[in-house]
Amino acid sequence: MILYTMLPEEMIFPQDESNYAKQQTIPVDGGMLVVEDIGESQYKVVRLISSDPHQYLNENYAPGRIIMGKPQL
Image (cartoon, rainbow, N blue to C red):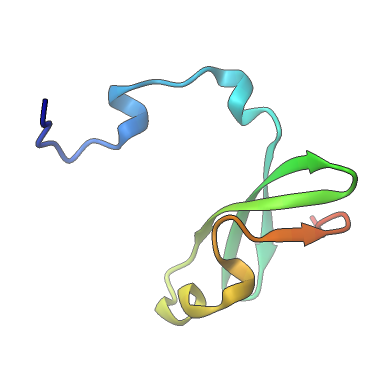
């Protein structure tokens, strides 16, 4: 089955709210990072929210990247 839609996947296939309980948004230079707490003071980058296209080239903000220590709020 192929769906041709402009709706995000989350609206078509909703996920359990508990999946988002560990996520938080932290400010970074030029945007915001959505990170997920994976334990032991480690956070995984879920997504970058920025209007600056150069921020998406920064390897430190790549999805899946592990951040050590508590992120600054």
